[in-house]
Amino acid sequence: MLDILLIVIIVEVVILIGVEEIEKQHLENYKNAIFELIKNNTETLVREDIISLLKQPPLDSMDVIRNRLVTLSKKYGIILDTEMMNQLLVNYRSKLVDSFFSIGDDRIEKLNKIVDSFLPKKVDEIVKLQKKEFTAINKKIKKEAKERIKDSNQILIEGISDLFKEDVLEDSKFKVIDTMKKYLTVNYCRDLIEGIELKLIIKDTTLINSVLEQGERFLFTKNNSHLFDEKV
Image (cartoon, rainbow, N blue to C red; front, side, top):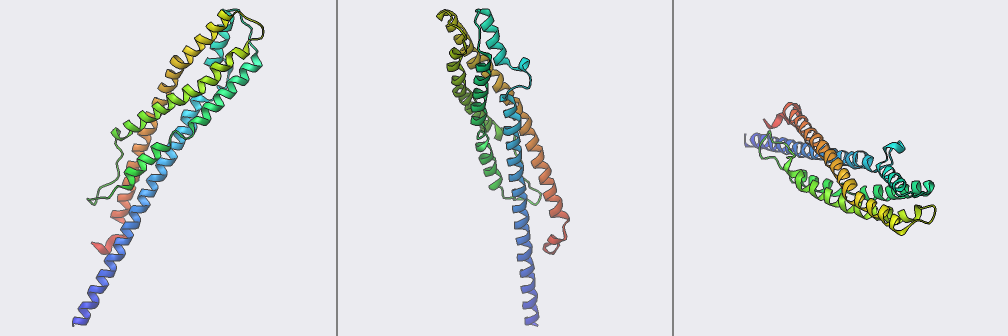
């Protein structure tokens, strides 16, 4: 009789251990799925949404920097080398775009830490990313964005004097360069940051909702799969 009871206990323990392992793996799969959501969401944010704000516009008429340079040159009666101007803008935007590719790395790292530390204390508890958790992350992204825009602007500011086709008055040259410098460091930078802020809000909301949906799938599988029946 004792032997039978011992066998029953051993079987129950084995079953319990097996179910616990399945639950552990289910939780790990759940976290990995969220890691992937964070990675894809951030890469799309940076490589598509933010980078689209920095790239060369499809039409010259949409290029605010080019238009501002042309307008200023006409105002002061200066002829610009169009070919050199286009190349300068290409170089400027190329550096700017390249500098932004890593701007989402900290976002991925910080959000992954939140998910990695998740350990459900209730059967129906899931990972939830709160809007407040994005505040510090976005603040850092905007700060880094301003610094990278500022650094890249130097390429444009320092290259403007090479665009003049003929000798011009130093006063006119100074006014064009100074006006462009103010425009790039104030208005243009501000407009880019506002655009980035909007992209961040949209992507943050998308990620928050995606993580909730993943949590619902996690609970549905946990509550309806026969793999977990033996524990009940």
